[in-house]
Image 1 (cartoon, one colour):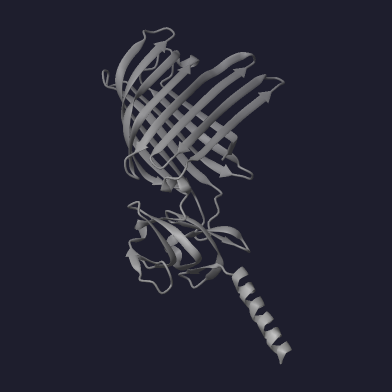
Image 2 (tube, rainbow, N blue to C red):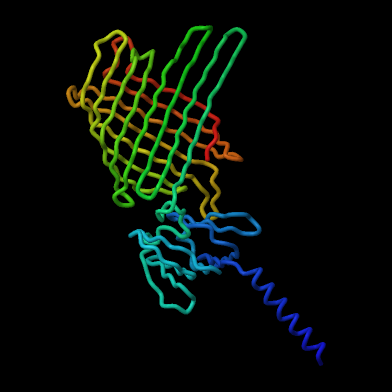
Length: 347
C-alpha cells in the first residue's frame, strides 16, 4: 500500500511538472484553427506568435477569434493607458480583454488595442536605435573602363516623445576616366511628439551636385507633422515646414529664399494573407521645396522602390529616384532619373 501511494504521488508530481513545462499561450483563429505557442507582440493589425513547428508566425489580428496567455500580457491602448490581460476575445466590432479568465471583462474598439507586449521605448523606458546602409558598386574593365559608387544610409534613434533621424547619399561615377556623376546630400531631423500621432521639430540639410551646377544648397527650418502609422509592418508620416534656403552655384548668381517644404515617408511589407513572412517591402519617400519668392521655382525629389530582406540583416533593393528642379541652371537638365540595384544591411 505504501509503495502504491508513493508511486501515485510521484506520478502526480510528474504530471504537474509536465503540465507546467508544456504551458503555452493558446491562439484560436476564426476558421477554427487552434495554435499553441508564445505571444511575442502585437503591432497594428499584426500578431507575432512563436510556435514550435514554424518559428514565429505573423497573424492578421482581425483573423484572431480568441487569445489566452499563460502569463499576463502588457497592453498599450491608443490613449496611452497600459493594462494587463490574459484573455482576448475578438469580434468584428470589439475586442474584449480580461485580466484573468474569470475576471470582469472590458471591451474596446479593435483599433484601441494598439500594442500587446510593446517595445519598452513605447512605454517611456529607454530608446530604440535602428538603421540601414546600402551599397551599389560596379567596376568594369575592357572596351569600357567604368566605375560606379553609390552609398546611402539612414539612422534613427527613437524614444517615446523624441525621434532623431540622420540620412545621407553619395554618388560618384566615372566612364573611361571621365566623371559622369558627382553628387551628395546629408540631412538631419528632430521630432518631438506631443501625442502619439502629432509632432513638431526642426530640419537641416545640405546637398551638392556638380553636374547640376550646384556647389552647395543649405536649408533649415521648423516643421509640424502627423504620424499616421508606426510599426514594423507599416509606416506613414507627412510633414510641412518653413525652410530658409541658401544656394551657391558655380556659374550663376547665388540665391537665398524662404520656401515651403514637405516630406512624405511610407513603407509597407507586402505579405501573404494569414501567416505572414516579411519577404517584400514597398517604400516611397518624397520631399520638396517651393520657393515663396518665385513660386514657379519648385524642387521635387522622390525615391520609390522594393526592398527584399535576405538573411542575417542583409537586404537587397531596387529603386527609382526622380529629381525635378524647375530652377536648375540653364545648361542643366530639370529632370534627373536614376535606377539603382542595391545590397545593404539593416538592424
